[in-house]
Length: 357
Image (cartoon, rainbow, N blue to C red; front, side, top):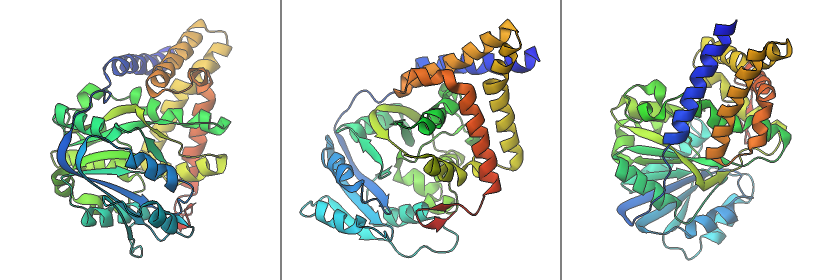
């Protein structure tokens, strides 16, 4: 029992420390001369349009840029609000999305149409619920160029308010900060080491086309992860950046949204069901077992629990999250295990923005 728990706990502690010290942040910024296409798929995003357009209008140090929105058949006021916000802005335009074809999911179909409508050498895709600083795109592009990469994914700071959000959302960044050596991932040619977040994703157009474009992930709910894998498979290199200082996102605002959001994706996150079982076992061994052992009176259980909490704290420090929430890691692990099981039980029946996925 000791080795079964101690080995993975020590491993994630070591990886977390190394990543904490070496993760790349987009610190500097320089004028970007390449033509940039910023593409934004929106569906039923009326509440986000004003702030989203405002932060895009504020972008600096982009010499040649176009901003293209695609309204994906919204059922609210998204389109009319966009047309009002973009009136008189020569660098901005909005196109209306075609009906969703069979075999595609909404977001990848929208991104595919946006790619076809764009002309940039570099493609920047941003979700409607993301807010970026005025230098976010230029700083990220500078990192892309300085590192000699084909794609980068600046991971936004995940904003949380409710208890459910605070239990689950910090695990997004912790999951790769504690398990993936980023210094190796940057140079690897192995797709399994890909990390990306489609909330804010930057890729060279030629690399994207070589990987098959968005058509290559047309039916993948986790389009960002699978796209990163396809990019690596086709010979490209890229890395996740710590984007906490330049971008924020509040993905979900209620338990029902969390349940639906993770319900539509977690059954695909780990491959076949065997992968999900392995993930559940990993979460139990590193998240739940140490505290259970500790309460039985074994002092090494408290040490293991403390080390896991340290990994969460390191992740929180880098992602500008709440450090205090790290103490609830066993509860977070239980909730995430529930969501994995729920996702498998409900696969193919979850509705998201009016569509079954």
